[in-house]
Amino acid sequence: MSRRILAAGNWKMNKTPSEATALINELKEKVSNAKNEVLVCPPFVCIPDVCRVAAGTNISVGAQNLYYEDKGAYTGEVSAQMLLDLGVKYVIIGHSERREYFNETNDIVNKKVIQAIKNNLIPVICVGETLEQREDGVTFDFIRTQVKIALRSVCAQDAANLVIAYEPIWAIGTGKVATSEQANEVCADIRRCIAGIYDENTAQSIRILYGGSVNKDCAAELFAMSDIDGGLVGGASLKAEDFSIIADA
Ligand code: PGA
Image (cartoon, rainbow, N blue to C red; front, top):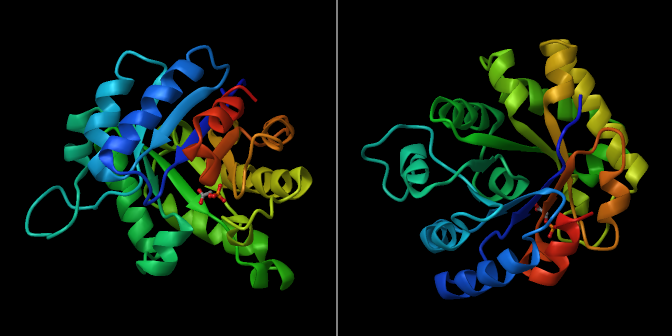
């Protein structure tokens, strides 16, 4: 089964709406013939402008988070329907920064995944181990737990369509990229885990990205690995030139 490579940019808490508009305008020219699927995930307040500029281009827009309730008295939160109404297609869920700074647990991640699917948003579920867990030899166990709980009550058909991003925490924003072999080994194990929960077909259709200091120089090698289907890119996605090279890698 062929899985299209996805180059996903996670802008995190960077860019004001006017800066975001400038970046997406620059990017849309540079990636208009990109080989890979291109996704950008700006901060919430930038999404309307970015969606407007990206409309009719080959760039999809994602959010970095959502809340798991439909609507109501949840001050400060953003719902799936609000995102959908703007033209958002993907939503990052369970990024390690959200798990660490905003106390997102595996159960919360699962609720958000279900809410995204229910509203036809494609979840990009983030998983990844700390350096300490890697050194303790519990990487696979830890990540399998994250994957299994994130996908609780998700049917095979819905699972086949979603995206998982393997992002070792020690590689995020540190400039310390996992080797292609290290990254592929975990992505392959995530795929085996999916096959165990569902079946081989589902495992073969799901896209698994690598994230953690992906840059224009290492992307091609990572994306060529058997079980890596693209990248979730932080820092390098803020530079149109660099991200356009990743979009073609
Ligand atoms: P980075 O971030 O590319 O800056 O390491 C990746 C991510 O956190 O998604």
